[in-house]
Image (cartoon, rainbow, N blue to C red):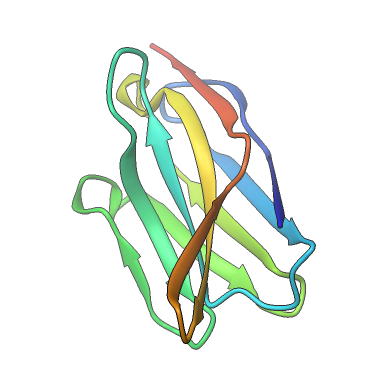
Length: 117
């Protein structure tokens, strides 16, 4: 399973970016989502969405970030508005598959988001 993330870049505070992540090598993923890691910090959850519907967005970005998913394309998107310098970091895509053995998670390589003040 491979997850290819894209859409990161340099943006000024108050700007917007849209991240995309497409999965390949798998027929279906039960969930897809995003984590981020700021310099010197641990990776933290940002948002996730179930293919069956339903999403979860971290409280600290809930009023600015929106997650969506195209199940047929195995692609998840993260619309990020009103970006702030504290949003700077590497954004990692995660895909999850649920089976009789439980959940298996896959990670993409990450895409860098830099927000200047």
